Length: 306
Image 1 (tube, rainbow, N blue to C red):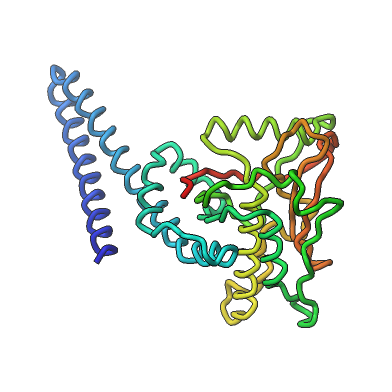
Image 2: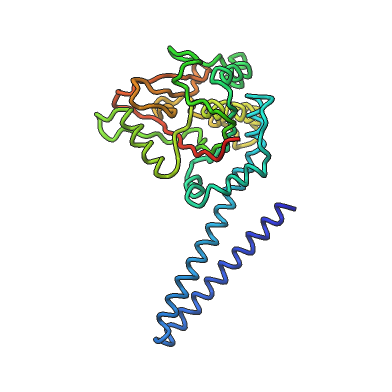
């Protein structure tokens, strides 16, 4: 019933758009017939075009929000996998909060390569790693004995503050979950990774966005490995001929690793990827003063905390 009402709303809005366009054309014809009506025609045209833009925005916004809400069940399931006793907001509550984001943020979300709804529990990074390591999903395509190894933390501990900030409450956010997300490359040979981060961070802040956190990325990565496993078992579907394309930040050093939110003035910056050679999630701390670097900076928008 709800889906039917939405379709009727969309149909009505498009009818309004067409009606506005017909009226604009009629006013333009009037303008050619009567020069004295020029101010009237121009004013009416401006108002009607503004109404068309408003209606088109409502349609685009509704479509974007419905696509995000369609991911709710999967996001909820993933959150409960990380914290089985976690209280999760209901679907209608998440939708209400998405509607509150407003036109500017929704339009920016539409520009994401793959807008992805995440529900990140307020558990520690160590707890999240435990879940990832006890529910490993990756199996190498050519050898069914090559199962995913435990996540590798290069020279770091799971309790390290490098993986902060830890969410204090359940975090509902939208991130760009495109697996093979385009990387950012330094503009000059002397630009450091820290300078790249600061520049990108400022760009995101202007749009009301931020960098993805290490906690969000781990939830995103684990979810992509679940989708990989599902795709691997559904090879009859043509879209799943290469299931590894489902994996976020998968084994492509030329595309860079995703850098997590951090203090760019620190000597090292946290990052992550999935390595198919070693079959494991790879969490690293890369030097912030290196140049000749490429990296991924995944945008995120906080919807609300629960």
